[in-house]
Length: 266
Image (cartoon, rainbow, N blue to C red; front, side, top):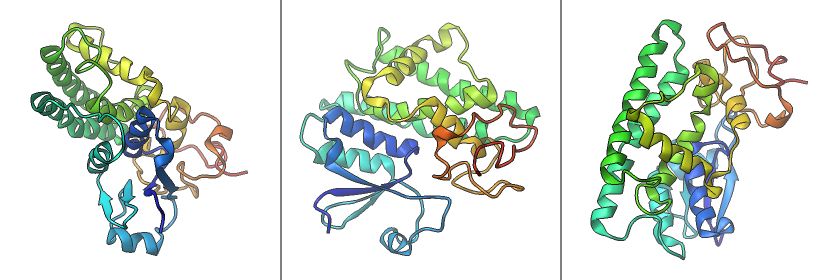
């Protein structure tokens, strides 16, 4: 049995990046053993037995063999279990406030993923407005709590660790949908927060190029390693490495590029 906590994960997964950010902030990147899972292949029966058949990642296995699921549960557990000052606010009221912001992550993530996976060009404005409405809600919340910014409180904390991976995954919206935050007061505070989060030195685990290339199939409506009709290799495949592939076409509404065009076959 490992003497470390083990995290089974997908390298580019935003929910796993939350854990990586926490470890980077603590300077304890080696405190957890990461084991990569290839979601383009059937799950390992031994891992499925540990998770009781569920396939969502990340999954944490403690040194004592206890299985923990759900990224926010894992993040809060490690925040308490690791040495050093916690990300979460110690003041009960401040922790309640940051928890109120964290609850907005679910609708935010859902709006972004539904947008990128949409296949009906006539509904683009609908999905764009839905995401903007969530941004406006977050903007108002941040303005009420700390209008000067850039953080919710005085530094990068729990809410920032929760949202930053999503801000970075939404590079796929910039690329495939031409998404931009409007230049208006309704988005000024959340833009300040988003930009500060993305620029933080502890959040550099992924790049825009990596996200855009690996999430190409998401932009075509196929998530979690599913194959697009007419293709034989998922954009989430480990080989060829994403660094060796060309950038995918931006136009997601004209059908898929071929495996060869995407650099997925030799």
